[in-house]
Length: 388
Image (cartoon, rainbow, N blue to C red; front, side, top):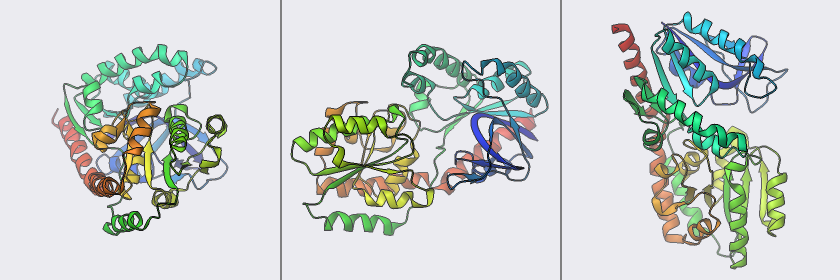
């Protein structure tokens, strides 16, 4: 059986090989090829001359990559007609459709699948309302209600839905069909020695040392929220706290640097740059408290990875973040005073307690646990089509 997978993901093409920035790696794609005979990927593509350390192999047997033109800007909108033709042509030749939302290509695929009565499954990996409302432009805010309404209708009428959250997306985009909560984020099984090392680090910490706060996210994307942590850092410094903020992530530092300078804490803000995947766990081990200040998220991988290293953590009231952390360590979106209050609430006792709680919670996102749940659901979807 042939399945079409539709999403706005960008694959990087080098000769006859395809690479991903991690979102749809060979490991991820194999979850579909274990169930289905052929996987046709309708996504965007970009030709490259060489691979860098940030790209992972995505080419595996029984997959075919179809380039869908990018029509999401005013300059390229004229390509939408051609994009729709390519999507419809592939769907007409397939047995069923898997569409990952929110995505423009996914929306086109579902619209045509419904028209020609092809069975489909929706993977809901984020909230289009949050993504557009916090995009930073008036156009995003204008489009948010339409995207929300369209997604809500598609999900409601889908017979099979995989949510990356356990509660948040289910509440906002309910379905009348079968569904599971199964995060797209999966991690190796946490090592008990990691927790022991974290607890030893806490107990051996000299009170005169700086407390290191950390966030791993693109530094030029404003809705990631690091600017609120920088402002909170300034308040905490005024109150006599000795702290630093270490930011891991790619992109221009201009905006966040300007915030740090404005509030007089440039000497306490350290940009560590883009951290290679094989070194990201070392980064989490180097910090004392992890902060996820995003104004738009599905279920953040970085937070789960930090928790798997026994990091005490706080996070915003966004997306699936409240599903991961105790309610007393959740702050209102963009609230500097809340961030200050949550950080001040940490002492040796609750840092140790949260290190243990977060470490145990991260075990729920062990790769094997999630893959078994997802594979069972995809198999059920396949059987329903065969019986039909």
